Amino acid sequence: MKKFTRADEPQVLIDNAATWNKEYAEKKTANNNYNFFWRTVNGEKLNRMLYPILSLQTQHHCSFCDKYPLDRGDDTIDHFYPKSNPEFYHLVYSWHNLYLACNGCQKSKMEQFDKDLLKPDDMHYQFDEYFQYNYNSHNLEPRVDKSDNHQRKAKVTIEIFGLNHPDLSKARKHAFERFINADEKIIDDYNFRFIL
Ligand SMILES: [Zn+2]
Image (cartoon, rainbow, N blue to C red; front, side, top):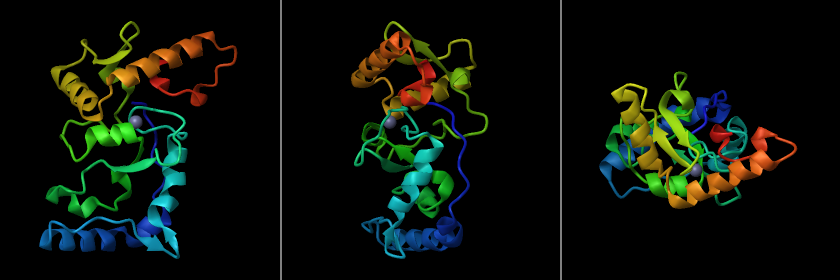
């Protein structure tokens, strides 16, 4: 999980998020089967409006596993605080709750949440503070020289996002080998930038 800096909140959310959040919370509280949907604003779907901004802030990489490039259909928007959890109904359109995510990370996380889950745009987050990379297994590991609290956060984050799924470890091995053998090393052209 590579650190990134969150872009400024888009005007459409500054103008509408509070109202939409309130509406969703009210409807979902009244009827648990009420489904979330992306609003249409001036004929354009809100998620389509947000993708370019979310994508630019991670240089078009998945916010969590750093997969790149993300094809259309593999560029979902994750609600970090799940929209199915009554505690977080009021955050469903909040800018800081929305992350560009690949299908793999979305499918692994689903509606899970843990208070120790790490956020890549948290100002205190740094990959090296929590994770170490095993260049033999190509797995992520909690950093053993950090506190128990740090290690728990790393462990929870690896589990919830499935960051050591065998497919991901294999893909990281290939990315690493490709990188060390490349003549020209443009980091943002690679996935899993935290291992390079
Ligand atoms: Zn991902």
